[in-house]
Length: 570
Image (cartoon, rainbow, N blue to C red; front, side):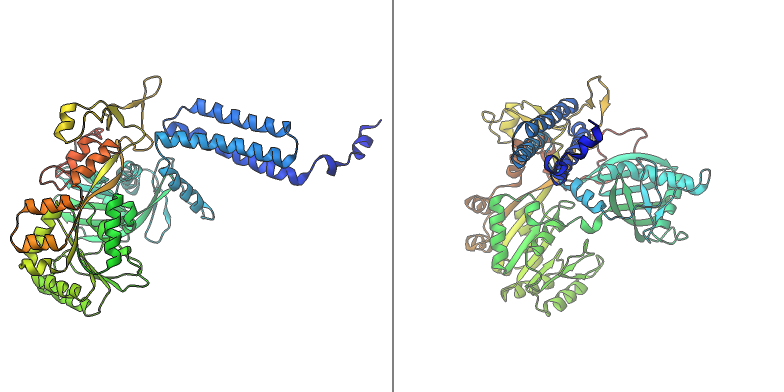
């Protein structure tokens, strides 16, 4: 029989359903995309690539066999889908145990944002920074052998490594004959490279041109901004320049507008601390002192507290010395850092006359301003006041000195919060070790209960052949991300009585314990015990009289690669 005649008699619609093949094809296209992503993700997450590929492909083959073996299309399709989902979930669980899943949320967000985005007409070589001018237009690399190209290449040198490592700040500091490039990640400065003075000058001019600043003005401070993209990640750069006898210096802050966009539950507060703060927010009256050393999250903490109030139901006003960020729905009054005490008091009185429900000030210097705020709080309003202090007790002492009268200072004070921020160990490359019992006892940790702690590795990662590897998660900084530690003192009648009667600090500490509050060191060591950070990091942050952060060194760094374990500490 003619084959064509035979095929013509086959009722295709009864044996092959086009509609049923569509979900089957869609599932396997998604599965194929999952396999390609996992193949790249496994090495970056420090997981065995080949073993995971074999496991996932075996699961796919098993799912396909079960689909054709079982009767009933939808039942077989459901079983096939279940097997694939279980295999995918197994990989994600293994990844979670190794490095966590937090970074995947950012990957997914970037992927969603990429839809509908018009691709840039200008491209750069892989691994280079794509620069955009103030108008938002991409900037192409200048022709070779031109002065502009040399300046462009210097900018690439300055930006690429710091941005890839997540720098929040980049400093270019000139000196005689050279300029030091340093960058800050999670509150710690690292040496980057040293540029010849001419290259540094050209780079500063190139960046100023991007930001639309005056190229002829090399002495007075200037500020502007531009955008850059590296490895598909967009960064907003805030530029500040100033001149000196050694040349023009430059500071770049990355994503400054979102730096303090943290909510209370993202700060690292314990459950009991969250309860106390939420109760205080709900009470919505009295004064709350918020304190931390410099560079330890005071602004983020103040902003999180203010944002915890409903800006649509409450009238919220802040008075800030050079606000770091715009707060949606909140009126922010700028007070220059150079403002006199009289100017401060006048601004505070002017704002208070507008009767806000919630008021925040990041620093109070004048006793008259403090007196105005105390009277304002007495009328049933909430007032947040920031101060630089190393503990709740030091914050209380600062407030008493500003007010000048203990009874007045304590009358409407409700809560004191003190915080620090410390770096978290990279979950992908941290190293476990057996701690010395004597060291544990010295830090009030139980050696009978703690048999293993973690620290930052001191040796490079290596592959099976002994070749050095770079950690994809921390970019060899050994730490990735930060969290906060806090201590809270509730100011009740007993605390007020101790202070106004001239009681001792030991009496206040006894009340602190009575409130079942924990000191900063206790909070920090609980993170050490959980494997989130190291004893070395805790000692760095809580060192006696510490500001807890490293500032840029005044001298240029040595040439050559820098050891990430030895950041530039002034």
